[in-house]
Length: 202
Image: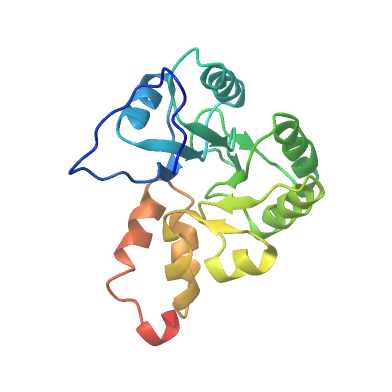
């Protein structure tokens, strides 16, 4: 029932499967990897943290067919409270710092704002308010805020199931304290899963 355009290349796919393009929901890709993503059927990447200028340039080059690659839905630089964990992160000292940080990312047409482990509740509230003004969703790799609180504050996605253990234990304070150091906090969080109370999880 499809009209094949004149001159089109016809490829026989008898005995094979055709699937929609795959989506990588959490990636940190760059020019050296995007071609491999596409070659393996990944046609869209939700890119959750990287240099905004480099990612925007990469988006433009992919769109112009200068290099083959998947669609990129970028976050740009991740936002965190002090101290930053990775080079290039945007570190907020006070909630007042949220609006200029979000506005800069919004001007770069990001698809989401990404918060990182040292974001406090106060900083998170300020970022979510600013992001809403720019109509941009917020996602987070949590450390100082549990997942239920983050969702209540308006965070729309949680990376790595972070904050879930903290939401279920009677005293999350030791987990928050461990997140002051990276990757100690992450290891403490992972060790919390085996002892998780299923009723509290529900």
